[in-house]
Image (cartoon, rainbow, N blue to C red; front, top):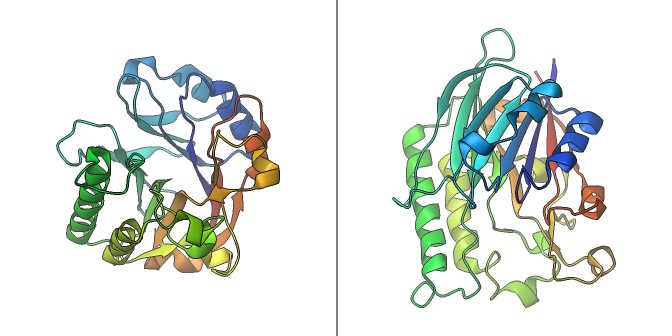
Length: 269
């Protein structure tokens, strides 16, 4: 049985529902995880997903900011939403899937805070929040005891951990998303699973790999100053089932695009 999971920071699901529909029509992932949906649960465009065959949708939204969702062809078992840092932000949703033979897969969808512009938690509350969020993620992942479970974690984690995950390691060392303290804390979250970086399982660490290109670039494709901010991690138990991945770079050139592109990971179960 072959299954595909996609993750995409859509930067407003209502504004870009046509792009979401295009992705679902052309690539037909079994499960789509969205971040930055930017709408309340009651405003989520459920009908569009249902028309395309995604009958099962779990939402954790809020007005104008953040928001995560999972749309699936497969039914859900449990649905869970966790608040981090006592902020009331909609940054996490989890569902349980049972694709075959009763083998439950726990799927977590995260939107980690961006952290603002200044990489100093003393003068920048947004950066302090991001670091605290990562600390709480690590503690929670440790308590979840992922080891021994079939689990997948996806999302916009807003950190490019490797030197080859950014266009210039030297230029971005003091830029939020690639600072040493963020990379270290994200590494601890990875180890807390322990998780396997599914994208780097398929793409060697020595190769450049990006999922985000800034809106500020006049010609994003020509300058190619990207970062890998979007991630798919899997439990050790699912590592043997990894069957390929795609980073849909071309979608960055679609009309009125998100600054992130979809990432799709395939599994052979």
